[in-house]
Image 1 (cartoon, rainbow, N blue to C red):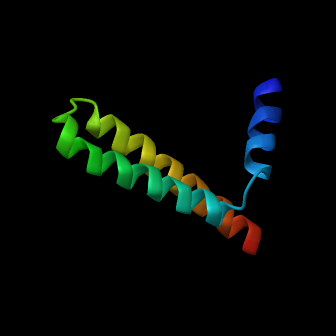
Image 2: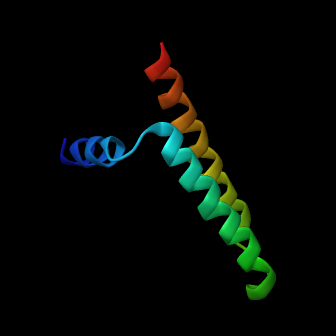
Image 3: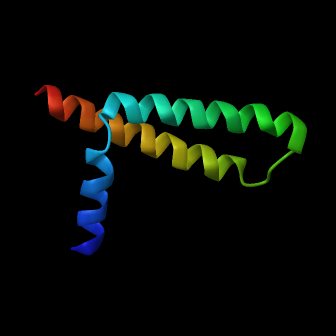
Length: 66
C-alpha cells in the first residue's frame, strides 16, 4: 500500500502529457550521450523500460480523457 501511495503522489506531480514530454527528453538525452559514451550492452533493456513507461503514461492520458 505504501508503494501505491508513492506512485499516486508521483503521478499527481504532473499530467500524463508532461510526463511523456519529460520521458522523451530524458531518452533523447540518453541516445545523444551514447555517441560520447560508446555502446551500452543494457541499451535494449533501457529501451524496453522506456517503452513501458511511455505506454503507461499514454494509457493514463486516455483514461483521463474517457
